[in-house]
Length: 298
Ligand SMILES: [Fe+2]
Image (cartoon, rainbow, N blue to C red; front, side, top):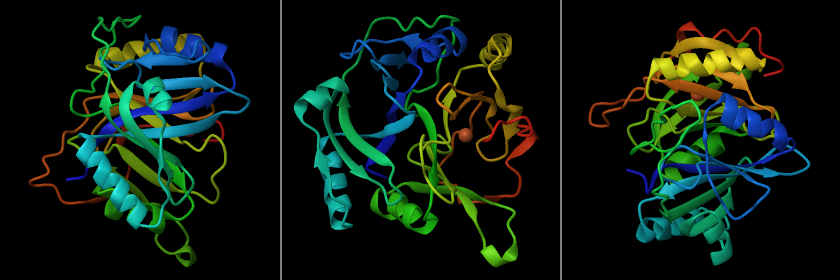
C-alpha cells in the first residue's frame, strides 16, 4: 500500500468569499469550522478542524491538495522517494503546519504543476460536528472524498502518482477521441477502500482554477436529495444531474461552485476490497443520469 493513506484536506483560493459562505454552509451543508485566518472559510465535515479551506484572493485557484501519511516515518519515506524522483521538496515551517492543524507537512509540485502537500498528525476538534442541515459526511478511514485534476502530461502524472507516491490504479475511462490522437484515458487512483481519492483528466493546458472537481460523500440518499433541493432553490447551476457512476457506484450530482469548479455531492460509494480488485476500464461513466448537457463551460 501507499505511504499516503487518504485525502486529508484541500486549500483553495476563492475570489468571491461572500458567495462561498452562503454556498458552503447554507446550501451544501458543511459545518463551519475554525482556523487562524479570520478571512478564510473553514469547511468542517468531521473531527478535523477543516477539510476544505477557502482563502480569499484575486483569482480562483487550487492552493494545495493535502494528502495524509500514516505517521512521521511514512512522511519521511515520501520525502525520500519524491526527492529521489528529482522533485524538490519543501518542508513547511511550524507556523504553516500549525495553520493547517497538522504536526508536520511538506510541499512539492506534481509533474503537471498541481501544488501537493503531504502531512501527518492531524490535530482533532472534538466538539460536535453541527451541520446546518444535519448532513452526515462519510470520511472515516476514507478521507475527505476525491479530487479530480487536469493534467497536460498524463503519462508523467500517472507514473508520478502510482510509482513515486504509491497510489493504486483503480481503473480508467477511455475518452472517445479521433484515432490520430491515440488512446486518451481518464485515470482513477485510490489509497484506501474508497474507489478513488484522485482522478486525472487529460487537458490541453492547465490554468486557473487548476481543479475540475472535488467529491464529498454523505451518508444517505436523503442527504443528497435534500442538498439537490437546496441547490435548485438557490439557483446554482447543475453541471451534471443526479446519476450513478459505473466505477465507484456513487449516486451523485455535480454543482458548479462560485469558484468555477464543480462539487460532486454523492452517497453509496463503493468500498474496494484490495485483495480481489484488478484495475478495469469502464466504457461509460454512469449507469444513468449525470447529464452534462446543461453544464456551463465545464
Ligand atoms: Fe467524481
